[in-house]
Figure (cartoon, rainbow, N blue to C red):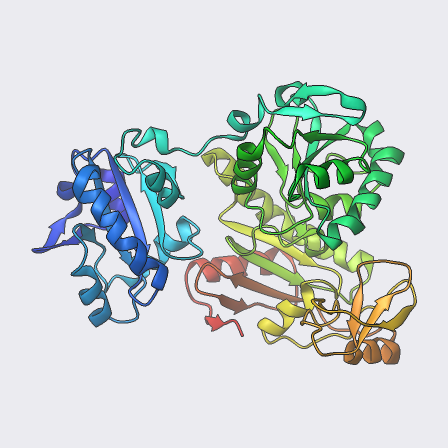
Length: 475
């Protein structure tokens, strides 16, 4: 109980007032942190369900629930907690609430994080686990999510020509899980590229690919898979495994490419960016560098505090020097995470070398000066279309003039960005800028110096840790 008391604080709130945390949780089989708020309609729908499961079965099985409030004021908290039959974190302890949300990467509510009696994490998706086991018959260890090996070892795979394998046949091989579907236009654009890279270089380097289909029917799957030169999960018998893989890797959009190492561990969830940036496999198998590059994907920027170095206008040597300056501290945080068995470091490090993709959006959100868009390698022509996004300003293109790459790249500029690119050719100089982006802290950011050295990076992180930096709110 000492670990839980340290995590939650010395005192919790019970129906009769404050209670000692260690005493209140002694003898419990598991503790569920219930992140919720009265203003949230899904929360108000889920709370009575959870209360019913708790009072009928789960409390007797040894589960305690601690309400962690996202209410807007203490009056709302008091009213909402009055409907709940368990313990609560005192509303006044907002710092502890923010720490818990950040530690467990709570991105939305209602959310339930289940911990063991010694504070060990059981699952961050307790809502799903409880919904499937409302009587707690498998509580708490049966609520642990399946590992990749659990899901993938026995999954049936099919290859071109009817080749049959199972997931465990790929152990000892580096392979990518390719989440894609024929109905998805970006997928249909990326699949031929990936197939060309695979046939030309990557297969010879030792990469295997497994198609995880999001198609709506087996006929669509068969038609789409006929264009692909690698393996796939059999469509008809693997719907559960496909859903479990989507959930395990947090797939929110396609195409997505997750790279798995020979031992079954994750190399990267941002494999599409890694492969696109190195289609010949020079850096295969693309183990993430201590300092990631935004052009390879945003990584865990939504879940992990991130130090960013904006240096889009520096030459290659200058960008390399900035990356080198960030590496010692980045390696330290990665080593600490690995020693703790954690997937992500406490602080991540990211270099921004191109004014494309997410970079303009980040500049705008952190109120940094905007850069003109980079001149594209191919000519652009005025086009039309809906549901597109400008690669210059990262804004929706709805209702704007669209200029599209004539060579078929997934690259579009709005009329304003197209004009700026034509005026400047993308040529402009701006000094580098260090920033800290802390999205888990309710969208906070902190401004750093323009000089990037090992010493200035260390000082920025030290000042952030000691809370001496001025907190600013993302726009």
